[in-house]
Image (cartoon, rainbow, N blue to C red; front, side, top):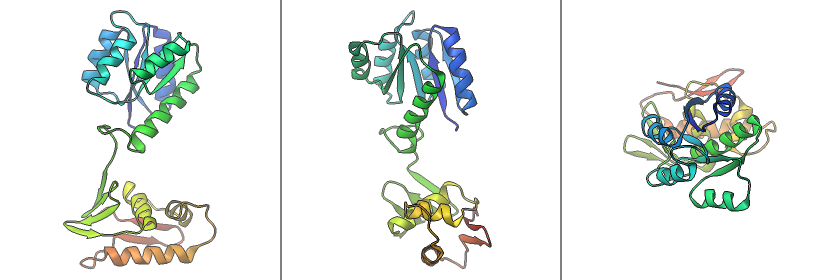
Length: 231
């Protein structure tokens, strides 16, 4: 996944269990045993999400959260044995994105991490999200994900909503062969029913829009599907 998660908790056993499950799920993990160490590592390690215990020595989780929110809107999941509504409301009011009560199942914690990462980064939430991608670039093409426009240099190539979704699919993984089913379900946002003609017409129109100096951008892979050439 490529995302870095920081676990700030004074209980080594909890850090060990969370690290085990998060690394198994593909995350990079850094740890902090108290609030001061947590603030130091947030500055140095630049984590993409923080799991933050409330009751920590040196600096409690609430104060760490206040410091984080002064200049950073990365997702923060509060972790605490305090389960009263007042404690949860305080954490959320200070800017926490989620709240997990101890004791908890590690699979639940990983699911919460996945959910917050997906919402904040993959869907582009947050004005200064570190990994929220706003533009994709392949060959001489640039796809603006916010304006839904395709560019070749200064030239604007306008796309329909279906064409935009298909180009995004291609440009996120250039060189990968996508089946007709994958293309249909992405482009038309619907379950695939044999619709080869729709796909062929759409790919043909995309090729016409992309045509430039005889260059082939979208290649047919016979019997498999289509791919966007990397170069």
